[in-house]
Image 1 (cartoon, rainbow, N blue to C red):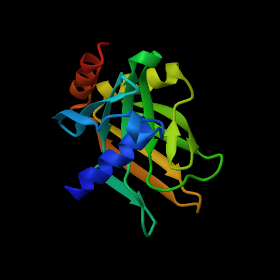
Image 2 (image 1 turned 180 degrees about the vertical axis):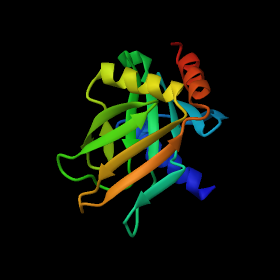
Image 3 (image 1 turned 90 degrees about the vertical axis):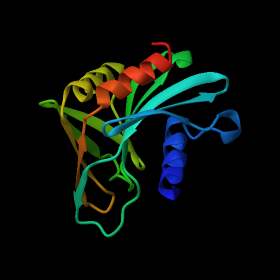
Image 4 (image 1 turned 180 degrees about the horizontal axis):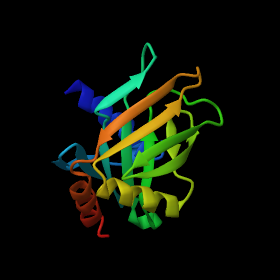
Length: 171
């Protein structure tokens, strides 16, 4: 239970854009679909919906690492959807890149601190479509200490989780 409370706090802070907790409600679990969970919450009176998963395997020569999550977020009031973000559990190497292989295609993300994002809405959509259609996703990045990590995610349930967050946000 404690692990899931920290999961909520971590995901909530990233999805809410590090905004004030007083302006946003606690995330509500919409359902668990295979290896993905779907959530929604209200921020400044607007609904936000997201899905999250943790890697099945984490490989790297590190001594400690925080929580790792892949997320897809919809913010209809801001006219954004399919925003992919990746929380890696360590600070990335400055100016570093993250590579993702999903459904036979490769994607590059830019990094800041412990998070990586796609460059634009078109890249987000392409990556989200690959996640919904694929069976696994491999994410590689380098920490600020130079440690290469390789995280492998199951995409089992990602389409159902995506459909759930899209319906919950009226998309």
